[in-house]
Amino acid sequence: MPEEKWETKERNTVYANLLMELQENKVVTPSGTETTRNLIKMDSSLVVIAKDDSGNFYMTEDVRYATNKKSLEFINGGISEEEDPEDAAEMKVDEELGIQPQSVELIGEIYPFNSLIDSKAYILLAEGFAEQDTDELRKVDEESIEEVLADEVSDALTLSAWAKYRANL
Image (cartoon, rainbow, N blue to C red; front, side):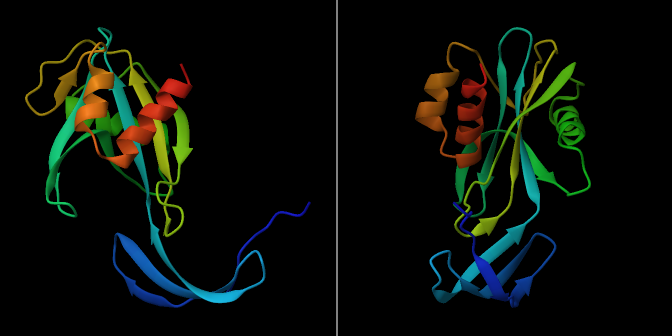
């Protein structure tokens, strides 16, 4: 059976800046219907599950502009097309924790909102470092992480990253 695909007949950039591009496109759906669809194109991102040798996980806590609410998340950030995800994750862990993990492994890729946004998120696991004392990040022990994720985390990338991590155990 042939793969069903969308066909883009015309692309129209409505707005663009350094972070994103908003398009309004004339398309043909996989079923053959002609219609207009909006698409947001963004650079990729990465989510790093940083786990020390004692089994602690390190999370950031920031007030996010879009929701104006505090968000507890795994270490994350943007990544350009030219960057290697593992190298970018090492730099991000060094930036947040001031250490170099012994290993960084790509454990998955997701498209967090694939009906509207064209942007990939790389999920990585960083391990092989001693327990860190940090005022900047929240340290969550292995016994509490599931409860913290269930009760305190609403960030889709963090929850998706945890699902990928658990699926790879």
